[in-house]
Amino acid sequence: MVRGPRWFDVSEDRGRGILSPADRAYLRGDREYGSVQSERNARARIRDRVEQSVLDFELLVECLPEGDRELVFGKRFDEGEGVEGFDALVSMLAFCYLAVGDTELDFETVLREAVNVAEATDDRAATVEFDLTFQTLGVDQLRSKLERGETLSLTEVAFLHRSDQVRPDELARYFSDDAPDGVDDGRIQSKVTDF
View 1 (cartoon, rainbow, N blue to C red):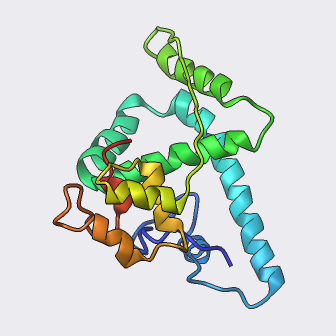
View 2 (view 1 turned 180 degrees about the horizontal axis):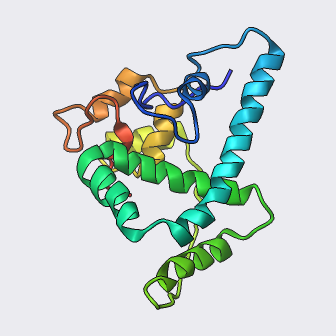
């Protein structure tokens, strides 16, 4: 069974996007199928819709009027959705980063081209510099950092939040309302400002 992140919005009020409400319930682990074949069919439908949605982005970049795009992101995400909008955009870019990693393509090349396709709409080109440095994350190392009062990055907090070695109440102690970077309603990701 697939499990979604613990801070994921479980509201079924949203309309269909790439995923249907049933798909969301399945990916969160809130729905099970009666047979292995039914589950395989559901996963195949999700994969097909993801593929077709990615292919639709070329049409959106080229043909969706700028005003419509601004109404979605400038109004709905920036003004109306608050932390949910931020989390959604971070997750969208994270998914794209992971997706490019699943291909033979170089992420920096894809990123450079994407930025330039976007900038071409304003009759300009961009120079894109991308520097990626990895570090190994460990629960003990991050606990020590928290105990010293150091700020954690979004990645570090998300790592601890997903870890089976850290209880939610233990992590919440560091992000309580008394702490400088408190967390409301379990949305740890949106409260980390050192990103």
